[in-house]
Image (tube, rainbow, N blue to C red; front, side, top):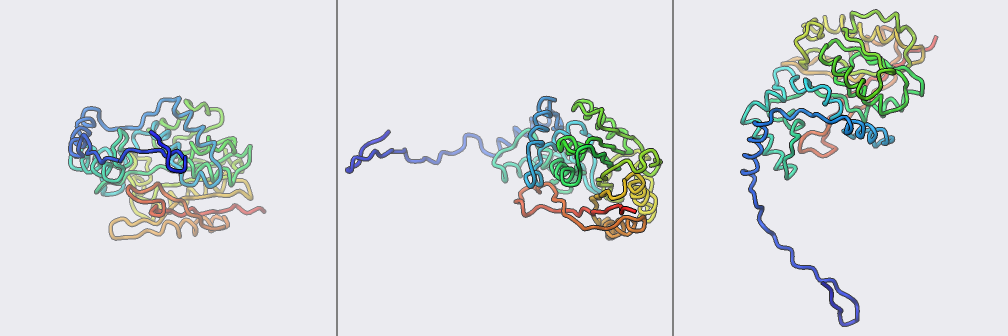
Length: 343
């Protein structure tokens, strides 16, 4: 309602704000949420195809720094890789294990209510980091899209020697810059998920996926055919992906074996496949396993230089936001930028 003051100006009157108590208290919401999740099962991300199409459109529309911190496209990759939520860091629980634990499920819901003020049906992100739990992460598609646009030209062929859960593959599609993607991964379940994703996203003609350990492959068929390499390999035995004997953490239980027979073989494959003058970016990080620290970054650079790559510089890859942290609370990992010199 409105009235006129002494000077003839209209004054809009607003009713006093009343602090009304919530109808349902947090404990009631928590109990209902636990019953819901117990009835429906683990909340795997299952986006319908039309939503996947729209997510790719949203990601492709972003430019420059907008791509660096976005999580757009992450759930598209998760739709085709539900087994990611069964993976975990060494001696930690997977999100699926945390979900089956009543105490951890309730803690997740409590944290949602405390930090977000509400709980949704998608609690996978919080289950991935609740006490004693550490999920295997995926590469953020937005950051991958940024890298492809920065380092590639239209018509380029890119190589990914550890395709993983498809984050960089989604970034490749969204970037609309390089023309062909060659991806290698030893896991049958992961490979099959990426094949389904590529088929559904109508990119079968531009993507080649190989289901082998990279160290078992002969790079000769791709010799000097790739314009850019970009990957994030396993971090030794830090993360559990699958029981398959083709997994590097199963094949090479000691660090020296893993470094010499997997990491060095992967970098050698990249060297053979890349054209002279091409850039190679490897996202890798030193890890603590038990009481021992393993120098993956230093060893990667040393191996690459021995093979013939020039070390250009390091850049930072910012990880997804930790629950309850602001942007500046995000962890980051190094990306090693290498170049195959011209003759």
